[in-house]
Length: 55
View 1 (tube, rainbow, N blue to C red):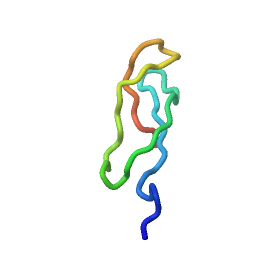
View 2 (tube, helix red, strand yellow):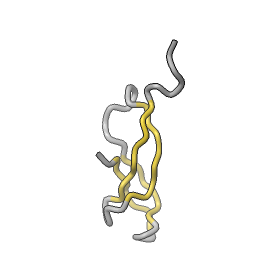
View 3 (cartoon, rainbow, N blue to C red):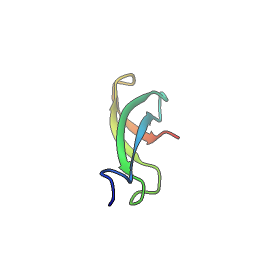
View 4 (cartoon, rainbow, N blue to C red):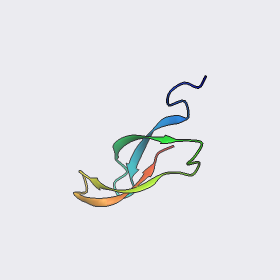
């Protein structure tokens, strides 16, 4: 029997402008194989910027 959240992994989201890690989230590695890229608010830049999944 499969365990709960077996396919999910924790990832960090890094701002593309200032390179600071601001967010931590989960993604399903079987359904989403490519890197996650979201538009989120950066506290250091004080504006909404693109955040990419860190390696």
